Length: 105
Image (tube, rainbow, N blue to C red; front, side, top):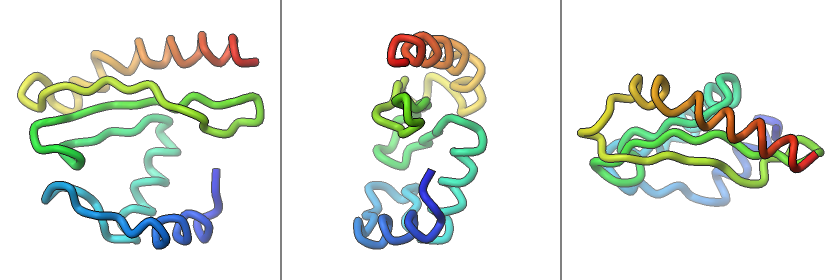
C-alpha cells in the first residue's frame, strides 16, 4: 500500500471529477475512504460512478502484494442495498480472489 503522502500526490495529480452528486472528490474524504477500503479488504461504490449503479470489488494482487486488477460485481441500486452486496456477493468474490491468488503464486 502507498504511503498517505503518496496517495495524496496521486489523487492531486489525477484531479478527481464528480461523475454524480455522490462522487467523493474531497481529498481528505478520499484518503479516509482509501484507508477504510484497505482495512476491510474490499471496495464499495454506491452510485459514485453512475446513478443507479452499486458495486463491490476485491483486489487481485501479484506475488509482491501489489494490486494488479480487481474482481467486481455491479448491479442496479434498486436490486440490492449496500449490505446486500456484501452479504450476497463478497463470499463468492473472496473465493475467486483466493483461487486466483494460488494460481498467481
